[in-house]
Length: 374
Image (tube, rainbow, N blue to C red; front, side, top):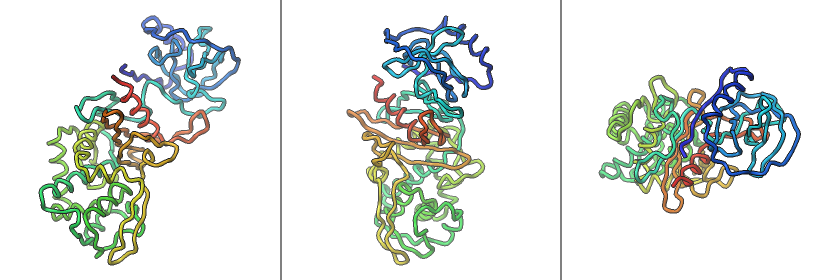
């Protein structure tokens, strides 16, 4: 089923009621009869709460703004509340309602992010897309393109994974200090090999390592960035422009969900990249200037925590105040290989009281959509 996205902004409650009544005439009802257990309560809608004609996501009617008090008259075994709107029963998923104000609804028919998609990585066919061509800041998902160009150089024989690289002062000078995510930070004069720098880039999202690798491939960062844009165009990426190697916030650095899908699909063809992005933790050996470094992945889908997904084989996170929370992920189930992209998600207080990291929760939703599709 192709999901539909509809949201309300500043509609008044009576306008919403009228709209529901008008739309209901055109809303197909596919739900089987589900028993409703009588309950009595008044609950608040979470922001974006979806209203259904029946307790079935295929009967979507519209979405409510947050903090609308509704009379609950029943609950179904498949997780919906029956509510009265203008004395007519409708259904809202239980995780979209709360006893307190100021929450965000869990959505069944759309992904809570500025843009999202999931596609078959083998065929390139998109399974679900939402604002997939909107121009957005990609944050550190940019690093997939940097890793792709490094592995292109390795495949062409100009580098090897064991090639030693001296960290230059120019590579470090080109990136703000807060963009270094490994500890200790990379130091000028330090010697690391290509594989170690790729691990710093893809597992811990270190921005300094990106510039060091860029200089190893093309001699300077500016030439590497030009190559990033050329490679992106060759993959069929549209409305994409890179101005740095890491995705650190910058004017005129942008892409979209579909282009990142194409980049990830190409990058994951390299076994080295697939191996690195699947690692929940890495240890980089001591160098001439520092002791060994151990660091955890920023991707919580591959760690045994609340967002763990056993089918995920890797991915790349990204976050900044301008981009929101981003994640490109790859997963395999029953020989079905898919890649998902979430851009512009956020940390949100859900109706359950949980503070949800939606780059992970919405990715899991996308992967479920993909694996349930025929």
